[in-house]
Length: 170
Image (cartoon, rainbow, N blue to C red):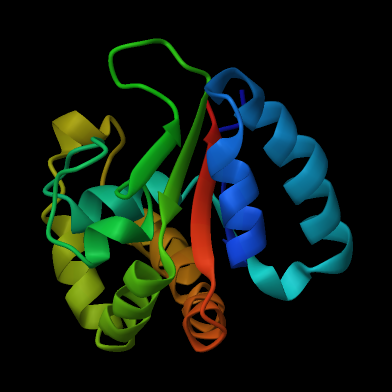
């Protein structure tokens, strides 16, 4: 499995459709109706995170890889939000978390205040044992690079009153 994280900004119509879909059909819908369209036609409405999403989430959420563990709005950057698919108690192979347009605005504002130095501090506070990967300058640069590449995405979504979903296959 690849564990590649992606953020998609979606309008109200798409958000309503997604929330009405049965849980067992969400992954197929996202793969066929969102991923295919956005990667082909709406690239400005997606931000890829590669595998950096894990360290980014842990930096904002007290080293934990839980759905709700950290201070909002930064905990909403990755896993926090309404979980549409994925369960910490089950062995789900895909995660989908939803952030409302209002939450997106607060994330965008909070990220504008995150400097590389502040993220560095948060990154190097991650508990290596929980992260299960050695903290290093190289991994920090990798994580910061992917995070900072999302800043325009979050601003675009906030300015256009869009919601955001985070997806990752595990």
